[in-house]
Length: 212
Ligand SMILES: [Zn+2]
Image (cartoon, rainbow, N blue to C red):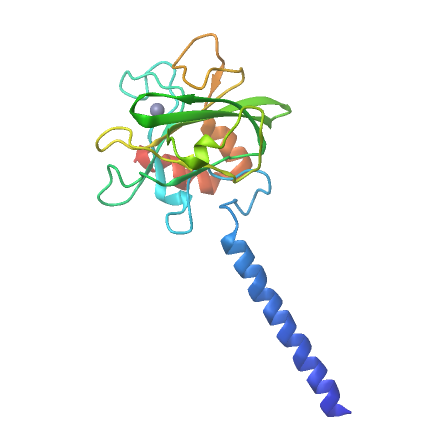
């Protein structure tokens, strides 16, 4: 009887270990969702190049004071990895929150952008992912389609020699996925929004690296 009890106990602990391992595998194969949020995730970052390896080369700045005179609606996210420049090309881009495709836009140089409507602070928020490649993942995005948090929206395209990046911006009003700064749109800084949902540590590492 003791042997049987021991066998059952061993089997239980084996199953518990197997379950722990399975949970670990599931966590590591999931989209890069921050552990402090079950609803939002970073727009860039993979297991190989996590979001903390990305930085904002250009920040949200509607007056041009922070970007040496350059007015900019969002943040330009770059992978901080030698030899820099175009190392971001082909990196996947993820929906930061669940929402709906508001519109897509195809620009020159085979680049594209998508605006996703999500909810933040109990109001609609429009998030744009710009400078994507017009590949199969992007071309499958249809206006009106539901998007899950962490869903892959596409991959970074060839923006310019040495200048590939994700331009990521947010507005409280609907805007055309191809529009540049227009005053009629209430742009907001994406960093505090992501901070709120992803946690300060994550965003500090990811966004503020370029400040130093
Ligand atoms: Zn930009």
